[in-house]
Image 1 (cartoon, rainbow, N blue to C red):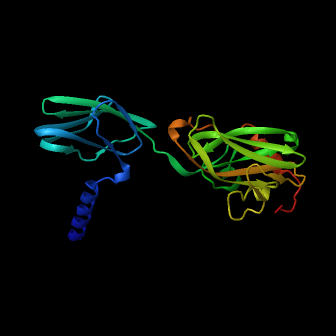
Image 2: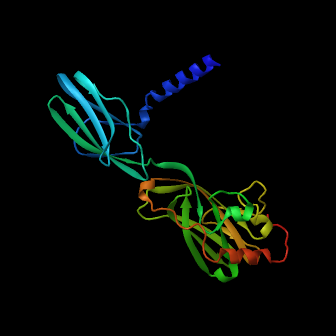
Image 3: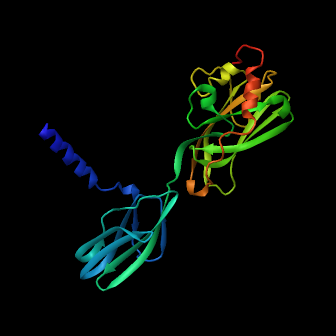
Length: 274
């Protein structure tokens, strides 16, 4: 037992001092100005005169988060990989490098990395209220008769935390068309999209599951609604974006969605459309 504990402690110590992966390190060579980085670690490299003492100090909000005296160095100096913890959407660090009798300073704004392959959907009614699962995701419930000949635009909710753009539902002649747009100025794109449409409670309660037996389609394609009065639409999106370019999360539930769901439950039973 004692040998096992010693082994586990040795492994933990090795992990604690393991170097950062190269792709997660931001290297600064010019010791002045302002930088922005989505990397977790900072590395400083620069030439130094022979036999110069080098000290690196990193502060955040006035508090020292890292300081090391590297002793006397010669030739090309390279610091160790310094961890820059991200607090919120961004964190500003001040870095000073003392070489011999002079000190150079610069700042690094640590920001969130670009997110890829993330989930997004239209705001409306929680999937968890329909299916008992689904986490933060939502479907949008539509009163098709009231919407006929017009459209409804709702926020596009990404990664359970961001508003990436909008989703628009248009109804005309018993057919539904769904479109989605990334907000102007947002650094993001829609990678994949599938539209799931439930026109009865049974299919609505299976949205987002393998048991779903309703209608499916793509963005900007016309989907026949078969004369239904109500629909629950789950717009399943895969998106990539820079979170720093987006506002925070919108409200996940639209007003009036519970009322539409109750009306949908009261509709006469019908066979699943599929």
